Length: 323
Image (cartoon, rainbow, N blue to C red; front, side, top):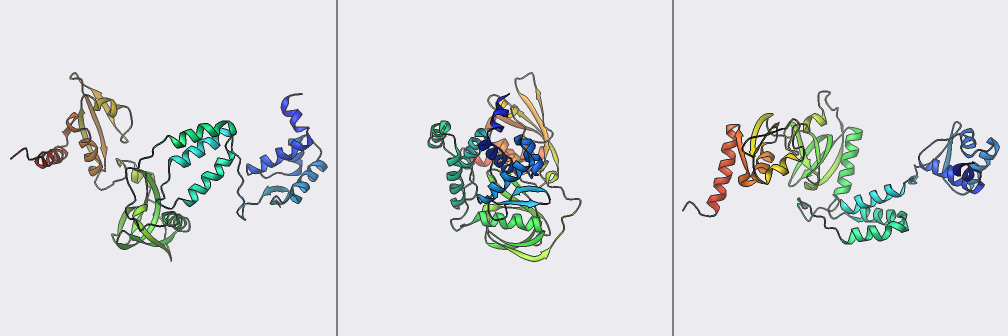
């Protein structure tokens, strides 16, 4: 008899075994419960009866029993590694500005599930980790971006038009999808003021209301396709190709990750690399090139080269070197 069989033959552990399976979201018949616990169907019926009488929200549909989640009861079934990963994720990322009550409450609840063996390790991580966001909250007046985010998700789900207060003006939009980039959420959809597809950063939306009008997302629209050729999120230009030569310390940084959909890296005899690709994000591409300073040189297109030269010239003028 193996270890599992010994556990299943322990009547007390049979209850735990059934509860675990229900926590996974499974719907079980008494026959399945009997087979799982290696007992009779009659014993399985008594197991279910005892669990229902213990105030567990167990419901029955046809012949299957399951946990009711409609009244706020959410089944949780996490392994030790999953609990640790979730806890680390929660303390590492919070994109809802000052509205941290929900996140902190969830962290505290997950903390209760952490194994005693891991508590010291995770507390050490928590006390010795710095989280720096490149993009801070735009306005101190933002009080509930989480609620706004949920309203926008509901709008997409129900295909209901929404009116948003975006910075200082109101826009009516049809939500097509969401993008998480640059440590911020972006809402992608049709803007009725611009009469085109636009994107709006969540933390710049100061208010949101659901409208009664509904909409249909065009069949030709594709969320992944919209962002396929963007550098990060900007999609302001027709797809165009480029070639850039990188030298010295920039080589390692450029070659060790994927920056765009169809990039290629070629080594030259001058100990440089030629990085080529295509994008619809000119502004983001320019900022990226400028971040490498003198270790990046645009080869083509000529219009991109001129814009980089212009930016470098402006920087030189800031220091008065032409005077």
